[in-house]
View 1 (cartoon, rainbow, N blue to C red):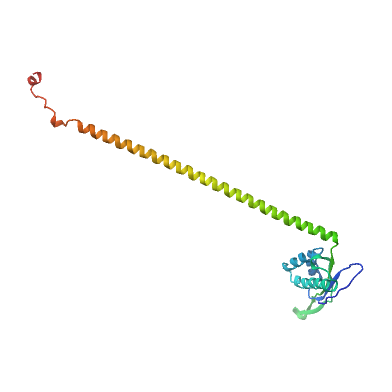
View 2 (cartoon, rainbow, N blue to C red; view 1 turned 90 degrees about the horizontal axis):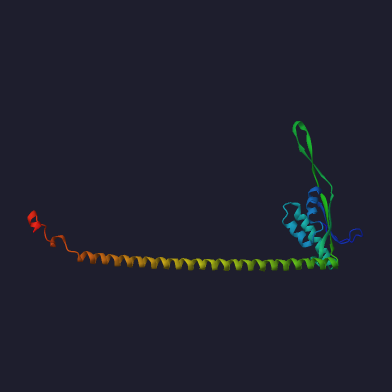
Length: 219
């Protein structure tokens, strides 16, 4: 991969070129479409998590362009964005595969040249981006604090409801205990009164026997 810095009147900026990449230009363009116009840091993250094999080569070319901008033009990497990126057709390597009946099929191994151009944001764009980032971060902090406040209030409300339920349960159990004690005391008192009444009544043996003779009954 050849990395060079060229100032082009049509496309100004620091550039890096990766030549003779063993991938087709079609496959490279699909990945380049993802990072075109993105900030340098965001484009680097996109290429890091891309599943295409050509993403590694494009990421190296992007880092080379950023290094050229920082060392040659003394630019800050955080203020760079992908101004242009494209893939040109390279030479095709021709190979042959043997087929049936003595025939052969051509195999075309495509190559491409990948170009990355990084430019610096204007002062207005940098200020607007910083304001957006500050607003987003403040909004996140505000939303996080608001969410935390709601969680704390909900937790306190649940604790209050739980304590109220415990108090009601305790009062109900105390009332049930008092009622059961009163009922048991009344039963004990009633039982003792019945025993006393039963003790005062004479037994059948103590009563006088009734006379069997009718005359004795009349007398």
